[in-house]
Length: 313
Ligand code: UDP
Ligand code: MG
Image (cartoon, rainbow, N blue to C red; front, side, top):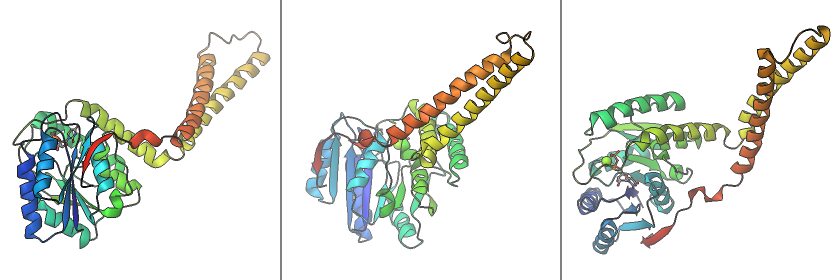
């Protein structure tokens, strides 16, 4: 199969018929064998019925329906698991991303040898204050932390080589950082393509203020997990040891001083309290490292979701 399209959606009933119509047109014009995997992320409108109707007309359309809303990342993750195509392309369901970009996004993977190609909404039709300006900051921060030179990490339109998506796990709000996840999984050839972007035609944006908090925290976890996820002790253990050694050193110094000069007082000097707290913090950090090690070996459920129905996958 040439292409799998993975499309997470929540309450997008008005857009779905138009979107799948448009995708089929592009696919047929290019003679691609393809599947469209719609992941219904707990929609409360009629989206799932529409997906089933669309599937009756076009068997390339498949669906997964979550029992409740888990978020866009969960939708992508399930779609990735089911995808069979050589190239996987993700897009939003709200008609903001154009299916006309599909052939070039695929070509860059197949011919130019990219592992991942990210769309870049150079000209963007969203609210400037709540979306465009904050996203400039996040892109700059993500570029700086990850070392990946992309302009628009959060673009829903991206294409992946099959082994990339089979190697990464997307959860939390990490759909924004799939290029970072891919990099940590060893895929370095990341490309970028300027894509056209439309204003939302139907419905409303599903991302509110929470993404300003959750997004950066998830980036911090990716960077941490990528580097120390399998060896948290190397992070906490080192920090803990440094604190502990400073604390103990200072304590010994104070005790010796007390012996040399019995007149000197201990408890009214800042050094005493610094020695106490650094020793305690050191032990705490060390224990956090151990607990981290234990947890990192025992988290099987972090990426399993309840699926109510499936169609064709
Ligand atoms: N979406 C989803 N689950 C959610 C929120 C959003 O599957 O909990 C889907 C949504 O239906 C759309 C895509 O993710 O297909 C992008 O969402 P939206 O257009 O609301 O984000 P924006 O373009 O405003 O950043
Ligand atoms: Mg949108």
